[in-house]
Length: 83
Image (cartoon, rainbow, N blue to C red):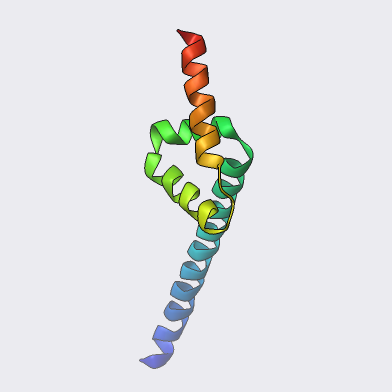
């Protein structure tokens, strides 16, 4: 019985490992895109504000302050110009 479960356990382990790697690379890509593009952060603020909040908190905890304030200032100025 143990021999028949061994290949199944290996497949499950590989599947979990692949899912973990996809998650890590996906999170890295998302962070990188948000870190380099203010337009992308604005899109995220409209569609997924909770993810943007995690980005802001993580950058603030790592010592990079002012990104949130710069975004808010820029977005406010762009709204004023549009009116």
